[in-house]
Amino acid sequence: MKLKTIIFIVFLLFLVNSIIFKYFYYYNKQNNCSIKISPSFEFSGGTIIRAIAVLKNSSFDDYQDLCQNVNTINTRIGCGGFGGGCFYQNSPNSITVSASGRDLTYAVSIIVHETCHAIQFSENRDISEPECYAAGRRILKEIIQF
Ligand SMILES: [Zn+2]
Image (cartoon, rainbow, N blue to C red):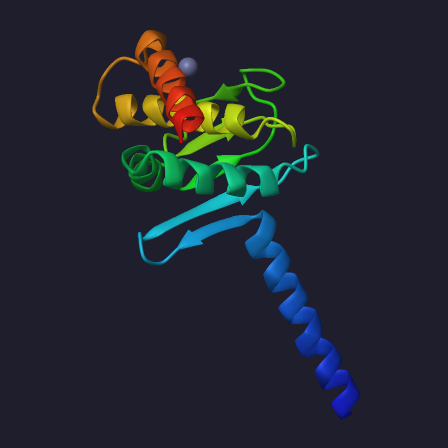
């Protein structure tokens, strides 16, 4: 292979890698946190990754709950509809979060709400809404204060 071709391939791999880390994968080695962001036509992977960063800075406990209970965030529209979230008991380590680019704080709130369901499931409790709506409201207040 020509040197030019090798340089091009290396550049391409680097580009693909940085795109994956920017939009499709959240990784924080220090906190042992890795979450796959599965893409959709919402193209909200970047928003989700920023939302996780906001969560980490505004409530570290909630961030750790997310890291420990969720390994995949689906960015499509789920049972919560457009701008909502969803938790499916048949894939208890994934949550679905529909987030448009402008609703960063709202996306954080949905992530916390759905993580709350993942915790309820992992603790063999009933999936109940009041606890998780309260968690979502609490994080909104914390972000505003932050
Ligand atoms: Zn819910």
